[in-house]
Length: 267
Image (cartoon, rainbow, N blue to C red; front, side, top):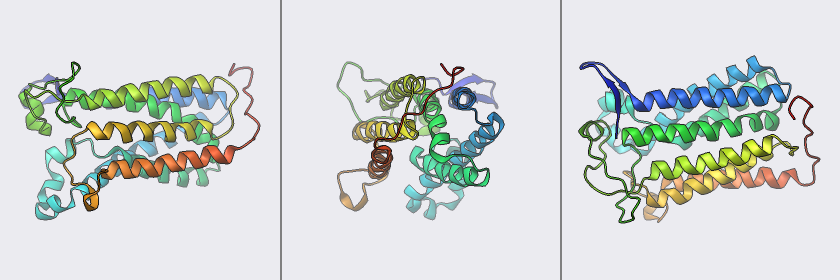
């Protein structure tokens, strides 16, 4: 694909980086719009979004280092290499650290937990959908061999040198599978946000739907790390299963709670 959007010899603008920045801005716009509807302080919500974004980047990198611990233990200098810094990391690691950061921030600033999380759910889905397009452009997070008509073949040498994607080999476009899934989830959550809903429903459905999508996509994705204990499921599928249970638990706890009524401005 096009891992380098602009290449000026010694300097280049990575397509992945540009799309990740676009993803963050799009997610922030959606979240701020929903915050205004809910009459929550947009400045507090913006600061929370930035804090979660930074925590997400750090968490994704940390889990990547954890999953590849054997390699980095033998080659500690690789931790600070350009390839490691450019790597996207493991999304679930970023998500979990972002959740922990959000919990701390919301307690400190006395923000309502589930109600605030609801505001972020659609934006997270939209941002992730755009971010996975960045993965596709860079060639990372590639799929296993594919003999379907929609298989994709990478032939850009820069992509191979940057992320190691196999060239001239038909692969499942797992980046697009995940991006498309997230876009559908965003559409559903955005539709729900415009109607009365029970507090916690948006974040609950996001956790359930995304983890189910990621669990499924991972069967078609290339995994450099061995599956734990020789089991059939990958590390990220086990994490997805736990996130699914967390989302299901939130939805079950909603029970017969009254739907949150929207203000006239929100309508």
